[in-house]
Image (cartoon, rainbow, N blue to C red; front, side, top):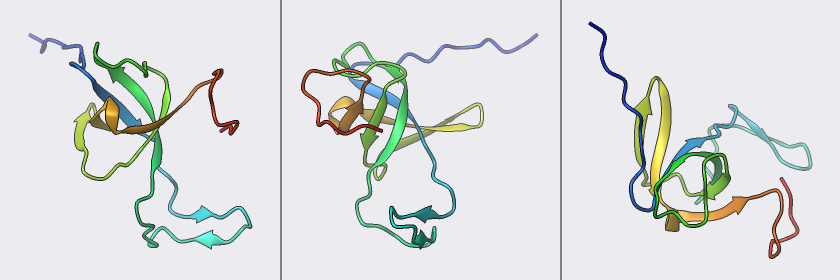
Amino acid sequence: MSDPKFEIQMLHDRVMVRVERESEERRSTSGIVIPATVKMANRLVWGEVCGAGVGARTVKTGDKVLFNPEDQYEVEVQGQVYLVLRERDLHAVATQQTDHGTGLYL
C-alpha cells in the first residue's frame, strides 16, 4: 500500500518561497569576481513564491519577491528547500506591469 500524498496549503499571510541560489562566485557590474566566501552584510535575495495563504494580499504563486533570508523558517519538500515567511517580511515584488513601480526592471 502506498503512502497518501498531501497537498501543501499555506495558512493566513504565510508565503512559501523557493530561494534562487547563487553560484559559488559572483561578478560585480565592473567584472570583478567576488568569491563565495565573502560575507556581505544584510544582503537581500530574490525568490519565487510557490504558495501563499488566503491572507496574503499582495503576492501570488509565481511572483518573484525580494526578502532577507536570515532568521526564516526552512522546510524541505521532496529534496527542495523552501523558506516560510510572513508576507510583511517581503521587501519587494517583481511584476510585469504596475502603475506605481520604481522604473527598475530585472
